[in-house]
Length: 212
Length: 212
Image (cartoon, rainbow over all chains, first blue to last red; front, side, top):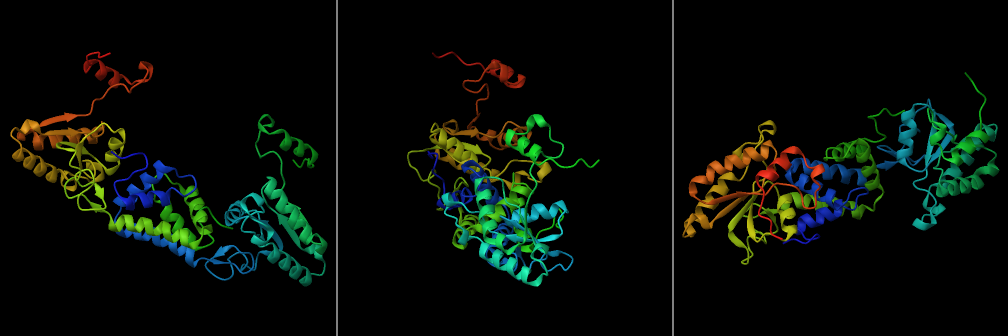
C-alpha cells in the first residue's frame, strides 16, 4: 500500500516534487503532469526540458531597460520610432508585455525586476533603481529642459508598489523630470455598485472633464 | 507593440509554447510559469528539468505488471505477502496509486498502459493485453483449479472502458478464471438526490444484503 506521500518510483517522486514547486500547481496536479510527461515521446520531453533550460540560461537582459531579449538591446529600446524620453517604470517583464498589448504606449520601459518588499527580503539595491537614476540623469543631460523627460511609475497599487514608487520618486525628483503615475479609478464599463469605497472616492477626487 | 502571440524573446516564446502543451495549462498560465522559472536560481531550474528528463528516460516498467518502478520487478509484485493470483487490471499507473492508497487491496495489478479507443488510434495491440493473457494462462497452469485465479477489471465506466473490459473478457474467459469488476452504485454518504438515474437504477438492481 502506498501512503499519501509514497510513490512506486523515486524518479516519479522527484519529478512530482519538482513540478509541485511551481506556483499554482498542487500535489495532485504535479502527479498528473508527471504521468503525462512519462507517456509522451522521449523527443517531446527533451524539447520541453531544453526550451526551459535555454530560457533560463541563454536569455539576455536589455542593457538599457533590463527587459528580457534575444539581443543586448531589446526590440523596444532599439526601435527608433519609440519616444526614448518617456520611461515607464514597471515591476516585471510581464508588465511590459501587458502594456505593449494595449497598443497605447509609444515610450520606452524600465524593468525593476521586482518590488521593494522587506518581508521577502527585497531592498532597493536588489532592483534596477540605481540604473534608472543614471538613465534619467543621462536623459536630462541630453535634453534642453529636464521636464522634456517623463518617468511614469506604473507599479501596483498595494503597499509594496506605493513604497517603491515613493522611493523612486525621492531618488529622481531633484532632477526636475516630469513624474507621473497610472490613472486609477473605475474600470471602463464598471458599475458603481461593484467599486470599493477607496476606488470610488479617488475617482471622485480625481474626476476628469467630460469629453463626449 | 506586442500582439497577443508575440514575445520579447524567442527563447521565451519557445518555453511558453512547450509549457502550454501540458494538459490543463493555458497560454496565460504557461507565460506565468515561464517567467517564474526565469526568476529562479539556475540550479533549481536544472534540478527541475533533470528530474523530468530522468523520469522519462530512466524509469523502468515492472516485467510482470508493467507498473513503473525503479527496478525490474515493482515493489508490489516483489512483495511475498501479496496474493499473486488476484490480478487487478487497470488503465494506468495513476489507478494503481489510487487503489493502493485505499489500503483495501492485497492482490497484484496489471497495468494496460491505456484503454482501447479507436478515436485516439489506440487498439488492443497498443496495450499489455497479450501479456495479461499469458500471465493468466501461466497462473492457471500453476493452480489446481483455474477458479483460484481472479481477474478484476477495474476500468472506467465510459464507453472505452466498457469496450476494453469486454475485449479482455473475451480473451481470458475460456481459461475458466474468475472475472470480476468494481462495484458501482451510490458513493458512501451520497444523497439519493444527487445520484444520476443510471447509477441509482443500477444500485437498486445490484442491491446488497443489509449488514448492520
